[in-house]
Length: 215
Ligand code: 1Q0
Image (cartoon, rainbow, N blue to C red; front, side, top):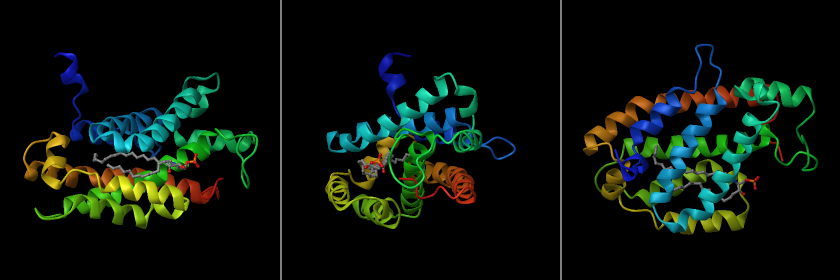
């Protein structure tokens, strides 16, 4: 296929990537986690330039994690579990205030993890939506229930403004590139449980290690 085909986003593909995140022992492979986010960012880029301040931050965080993965201590970054253990054991994480380790894997991944909760809530709303549902409303409700609680006023304001630029449900489904609305619903139904599971495994890990509020 030609380049434009390769660039084409498909929801199925991204969701499959999240599927491959979990090992049989419920470890989360960082490489696949990051690949899932890459796909989401590609999708967001199709939605227009109002979202570029969001995708810039996401890309930046993805890159930080990729650098850890490809770095000399990359072997410790294969799974989120091994990353957390390594960084905490080696005291490579700022626990109470920002300082020496602004790019720790733990604090960087936590930001994406919180965004994954937004995605879960948003996709759940999409899955149960009807023809006259409003994507901007679904998106801001999901945001207010999740990420907004971790964002300063100015960011909430900017995000809220961007949400109004979201395309309507029909266009949105087209961009997802899966097929008919029924097929979109089916793919969402199959994959949401997987995203929820990745979210839950990560959440439990962070809770056990008491690192859910890293600065
Ligand atoms: C489609 C609309 C996308 C809406 C995404 C909602 C998230 C809004 C976030 C707005 C804030 C971004 C600006 C930077 C914020 C940072 O301050 C913050 C904290 O980091 P730090 O280093 O300052 O402590 N960063 C974050 O909270 C990370 C935010 C990452 C957001 C990644 C969003 C990726 C979205 C993908 C769109 C997918 C569309 C779904 C389609 C279905 C496909 C399965």
